[in-house]
Image (cartoon, rainbow over all chains, first blue to last red; front, side):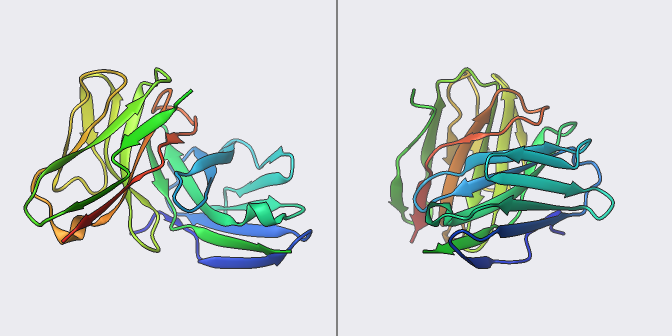
Length: 112
Length: 114
């Protein structure tokens, strides 16, 4: 039973437009949610996070929205740039258990 | 600042061989973890450690052993390699496991079992 799901394996967006990446979860014990970005042949790098007590967190071009009732979060990138092309992983943390659970990732391609 | 260092970057093994994947961090992080990533899939937790001398199993621990004798090092041992263990392995660390702090990842070890 996959507790964190990213239902879109890939997303293609034109440079300058908005990219929206989605993530759904099932475990109500998750209390932090994070997005990581991964380039080929490198490890994931942290992008942005949100606590379960908030519904929005913004950092420059990146905004994460959390809808707890729907158990859904999304990452918005505005405006999208070609350098944003990467695999994006959604991760959820149950701080009581001290473990992170990752989704399968979404490959974002930003076309010039 | 090196961060999380994994060695080797690539390795090919024969079925039944054993080996150790090395992971070291220089950030004095208490929490360290090992993940495997298979094609088209996310990262699955193998083992983790909340501090020196303490380890615990993750989602997919079978066939792997770990130890944490120092804060800096967290090696992953394959006892008897099997083709199903062909994967990319990532080591990660964070200041504490029981918080929402992000993990710092190494660049991975690509392992092929023939």
